[in-house]
Length: 171
Image (tube, rainbow, N blue to C red; front, side, top):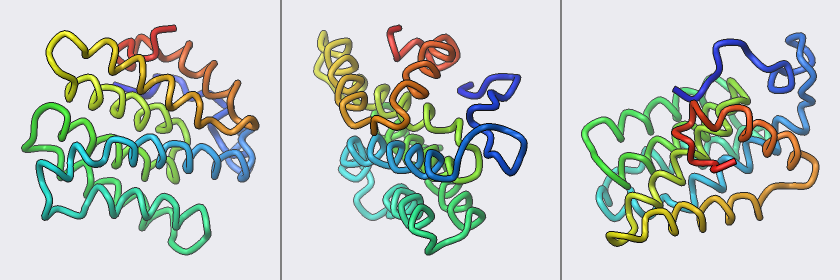
């Protein structure tokens, strides 16, 4: 589980009664897409003929540019997660990261899902004995990519939801 039982109003758009601006929603989607893309090769090396996770990441970015609808992007995310179902390990986690990145367009709080699954993918792909190091490096890479405008929001969200995100944020 990656979503809290009670929605954080900071991840609900202003027009839906929360405090999240459209600009910050887009930044969350772009950051999530970057997190997922960073580990996408782990999926593509296992399933080179399956474009669904890459398509989901592309849809997330296209949504930010206003080129596709939220519904189209959410559907692409669902297809990416479908690509994960029959897999195990790093490839599975990478596909889920892509799916989570796409559904940020629908629910902004999925941003941590993309990041958490990417960390799990990096960890699963590491040689024996190096999974913790790989997870730490992936987590740091992700934090280095955070735009300043959403940095504190995401870092606080990581602290608050670390326990329901498999403790991958090591807060």
